[in-house]
Length: 433
Length: 181
Image 1 (cartoon, chains in turn green, blue):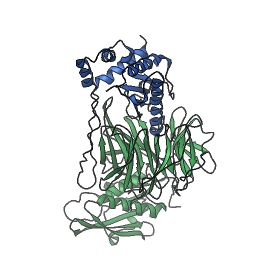
Image 2: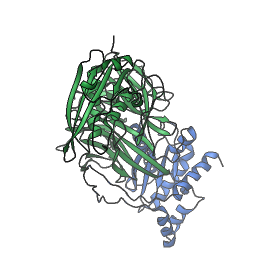
Image 3: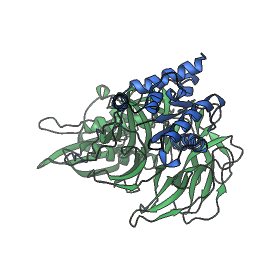
Image 4: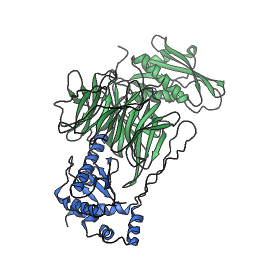
């Protein structure tokens, strides 16, 4: 069996032996990987002219390395650098144990435009598995490389790649008590191109992506109390959508992008509301005297799960977005279950489970059983990666709070450590169109 | 004096020592040109300026009681036990003193800022911080203050005074701060 499928594995990890992806502003350190990574050779793409701002073949190689499913051949070990199928001597690559070969060429089309062509070849049959010509631009070359990584990943592993996705997160630079700078940032999934979209001396928290990836909702204390804003990440335009006395927080977009589930405590204690973004109309879903917060939508939009301590300690409950009876979801899973969110297939929840430390746990909605998948003492803010195979979360690391990612079965782990300040509240964005 | 009380006073002094000025240095950027939003600054609360102004005005017994380091009014932070939103017995005298002061000075308003330690999720901690602030507010009103004099806000785990990850730090962060103008 030539191909080794790592079904639960996605974006991150490392084959046996220590490897670190090159440093971006968000340095990625791989801490635990998967065996049986596929050997692949990615040859520098042909290009003549002044140096391009990005080395596409290297970006692809780094992406595939980071996924843990591939072991790209180091560039200095490449026996030759073919850029055309006619130049490929497949025997050379078979001898080196390569399963697949990626070659390509880049040509300029004028006005900063480029055409990037690549071919994914099967070393054993000598046949082309995939080949594309992708129009690109000098400002977009990394994204094109990520798209190629997605295509390679999907062609060989039969699962959608997420190399083109983005993450949003908050960094905190603390200088003293009450003296800190909070930055809401968006970066590519590989940590590059980090961009600050909000900077404030007051806390910022709970970023949440719209399903189309164009907007971020978040909570900001810039007006001396929590308020919810929705900001277009392309234009920077934003709107304050929920504010007033009490807590206004925990925004979550509905799957159709038209509504936000939020937490408001204006009636005396935190309750779940659904806000229509168009009309501004708000529907209250909970009325009990406890804390109800952290709403999250099911992928089909029919259910909202949330955290409630109405029973004495935080547990997960569910309710219809239209309102009505609320049912408890977590049982026999300890005294603290919070911040649940759905897997993309709707069959399980990832949540924070406490009890002698806080860990990420998966709750199977069919069996009702939970299992923990991380071993830290302070693992928080789980966010399911779009495809349902990886979970990104924040954890306590050597330098303070760091982002980390784990596969759903807990076998592959990586840390994403930011150089400057502490990193919190990661939200993994949807696939880019 | 007990270590807890000493820490409480030290923490209160730290709160006062750091400038309460909260100017907003904020920008939102899109992929297009930087858009500098003219968001109005929130109320400035320069505690030191307010204090010195109070003394110069010589507003009488009320003002000097607030500034008297020997008065229970000088305690501006109330601490809480883990996962608790109940005011501990050792702070009842402090709350009583502030309630009496507010009752005697109906023109004075305060803010109660609720906080939680970092354990648990940030949003649940935002709610815990609010519960603590509301517990103090309820007690103040019961003891004579007017509800309209008291504004509450919760910062959850977002504004710790101590950055450690041990019980020492956590116990300092589980608090409600009483903020006079």
